[in-house]
Length: 512
Image (cartoon, rainbow, N blue to C red; front, side):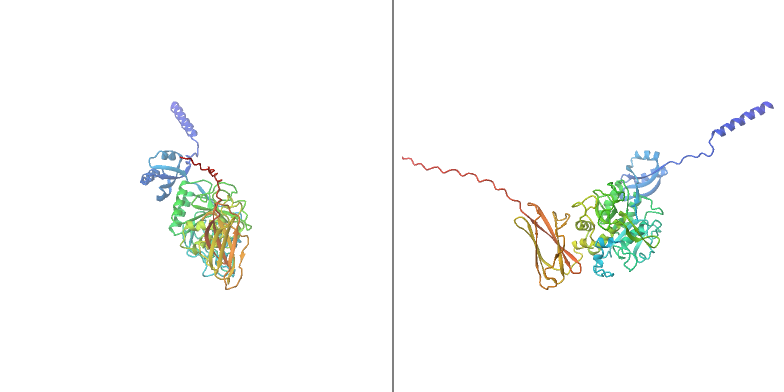
């Protein structure tokens, strides 16, 4: 009996030791998941999806147009996926952040009010372009659609459910800058309560960040909603080939894409702003000085107000915020106003007009801080012929003189003429320089008789072609652009020294 008890004791001790050797409460560690873009070979979508499902991957999106699936899966599965015959490319799904806000004089600064309320009467000119008939899609944190200054706007819809609420605040401020109503209280948007809006909500409560794939999906939803302009007051520091391809196709389909240059204050690129298909917008203050936080690089295309911008907030009130986000909102809405006055133009033509008429700031010509310069809504509209004036110019010509180019023009009458500006460029679509610092005044204001004008451009180089535009301004401040006309001061021809003529020899007569 004693031996049996001894054996039982030894067995119990061994079981106890084994039990003690197993750590109490230890669980298998969850593998780290990687969220990736996976491009498949044409015709291999189904087999790739099956492979991802076998790897227990979480599939977020399938983009047929990009031949890509976005999924989250563990590292070991990624390694196996890299050798799959279905796969062309694997790329990280990168984060995209709302452009930071540091906390609206901008309406006047970009000439928006001069388009739809040129007399400053507080009333919209019913015949003036104001953004009506254009649709801006705002990709952001949603919007407080019942805000007193936004509740009457033309929201055509949004995605997902809850797009008309905002628990982050970023989107409501952006929408107010774009389109707050002209109603006698609160603030005024660049397109004052008139442009149509579609909202895609990609940020939640903390406004932290989203993925590039979510941004692409949002942009496609904007396209499907009929957007003319997509506002992206957001960005991230890394390039995505999928994102680049998606935005290129959207631009080629006729949509104007506008995004924030970024708020780090450095020279790094921000995406999507730095894709060629997207307008990158820098921020300036009320003195037209670039903000210290605005990123500066060779992809910056235009500048707009972005320092201490007063707009709507999610609490139902108003607040000042700063950032290239706000600058982007000014730019998107300005483009919509210009486009509403010239609906026959393409997105590329609207973009070109904004570039050509921008107020050159900083270094002469395009630079990394301001791009082409500050957006001028009214001037861009005039360039495209969308804002006729009561000034009729009957002749506009340019002729070379000995050392200069003489520009001449005539008016039919001086009844409503206030004056003129002249612009010059070295190509028909190149950046323009204004030749006169102040308005060339009307010769006989109020006269029913026309007048002749002349301007001499002496700062020209022989052999170069120059293009000139004339901006005629009436007494109500409306203006219209004429031109371009082309002239060239011929290069001097080199005169070769005359060859010496042979000396005539006397004729000698010989007798026969």
